[in-house]
Amino acid sequence: LLLHCRKERAVAATKTYVTSLVGMVMIARALGAEIGAEELAEIPEAIRVALSCEDAIREVAPYYRYATAAICLARAFNYCTARETALKLQETCYLGATGMSAADFLHGPIAMLSETTPLITFAAQGPTYPFMEKLVRRLRRQNADILTFSNQEEITRLSTMGIHCPVRVQEGLSAIPFATLGQLLACHVAAAEGSLRLLWPGKQVSPVWAVIGFQTANGGGAELVVFFTRLYRCARMHAVVSGRIGGTRGRCARKQGMDGDAW
Image: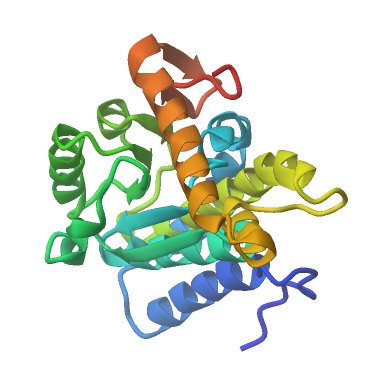
């Protein structure tokens, strides 16, 4: 199936993934799925709305530059969004990210939850939204650090930080604009990590590779892991103690906690 998205110019393929989703939607419609022509016509506008959230995503991205792991969670149609976001974080940031079903997360993997492992959740209006809201409430009671992308403002307020992206598509189509949000997050976390090139001039280095490099050079990897863990905890502590709450950022963003690089 020709996707008409032209040549990918990076390892982190973005166009091919999004157009593959659109192609699958068109196949499903041809096989009888209840997807109207007007709903297909709304997909480009939904992607434009997601792109309009870029400034908000750029603002929260520096908060994650010292994280060495992350867990991406969603359900149903956006399970693929969690997986795609984790993959993009791996490819662009060399971040130890894992994407999984939010339902499966409760059956064992929740043991990975810690103060230094941020959670990234995707919650679209639809049948799975009540589960995602309940999950975020539970994890916040456990002091989890959660960044939520949603077209419902309530769940973004419950999270540590949230991006409210008001796309108006059914849940089955929400994975298309939500994939754009996850890809933008990976892009700007990678850009924020650029400051770590001080360790190796001329190279962009993530915390994970810094640890590997130091461990190889002089066996100091364990100490460096502790160093980055403390940096991440410092950033997180600042967000909790300062209690800053950002108002509406443009049309798409609500951010609670740390204000970019201000910490």
